[in-house]
Length: 489
Ligand code: SF4
Image (cartoon, rainbow, N blue to C red):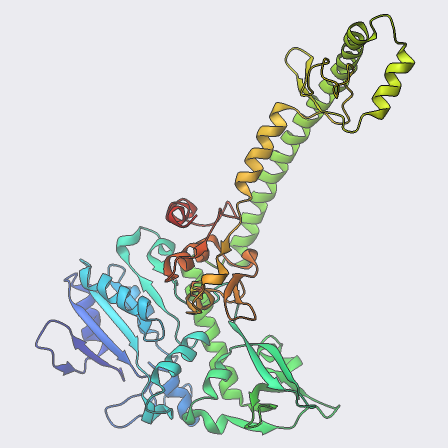
């Protein structure tokens, strides 16, 4: 396997184990615990490539797509293989997200099912990173989708979507998370640019991939260089004569370019395919067929509701048109009788009406075709005897307005108390962002889910995130997240 697998709670000695043996253990249903320290290289004989670790494969490009014996082989996804046993708890995690790692291990230890813990373990000498840089390397590996976090727990439900959780991965709604790169422009002024964190951006930071990056000149007007993330979206024909590149900073903080090899392109495509597969299994991404089906159903539901609303509106309008003139006429007659007192003419009264500063609305009651003025009684000096209403506000309207207000309870952060811990921005850095004082605010609640808002609220160490109410009433598992949001609103 190229990974070290050990039993927890047993004799404690490290043992190498083939997948067949592991499979037998997982199928046994016994509450065994298996820990896989995934360094992505075949370490027994010194950092060789292995097809169970894509990083190992790519570190020796001659072996990319082949096992250590030179045979073509598709990379094995140990987490998916373990999940295929169905009644197995599977955790794929890393030190990049401590709460995911600790919480996931504790849950797995308490599980009644066999548990597999696949833990990404950067190996500084093999990967070519500093001895003290393992945590930073793990973080970048996670952010670039090279090693996604996941938990598969059969105790969570009967469907795959219920059992599989991808919580903890950054910016789940986008292909790549983004970050802001600050640099000095040609005139030496401070500038910044928003860039995606791709597999290439991560690989460029590790010594083992050095040969896959070459310095590239800046745009000379006849430039075939294309940003790496855009290159990945191109068809093979469009890619002809193009070279993908990523942005880097030189020692003077100036922007530069690194051209990226085709092997890293292949690696990115492979990782994106696995990320998409995981999202599909977790119910976060629908295939075109399912999307078409759901869209058809939603269109039908929407059309039905629209027709019913239109019919209701037209009925109310027609009722209003027939009864409202009667109401106005009655009010005018009453006013004339009360206020005219035989001394004033209709023209006098109309003059008074014109001089009124604010015309009070009349509340209209459909049931008996009478109107109730909200104005003070006629005896008041400011009160006219005859009330005119520029608009009719019904009791039903007010109730509707109140409901609307409830629905519109938006999320917010007590920004001034933010400690800049990165917990919320790690969850979705398009929804949560830092202001110029490096304190978090909600940049755009529409680019994430209500679940992410609640998770951020739960993780926020100073409890200053208020999730509000959901924007999307069709979001998966909403009832649970609304309940969990309550303590924070
Ligand atoms: S989780 Fe809370 S404290 Fe941390 S960055 Fe976000 S708002 Fe600030």
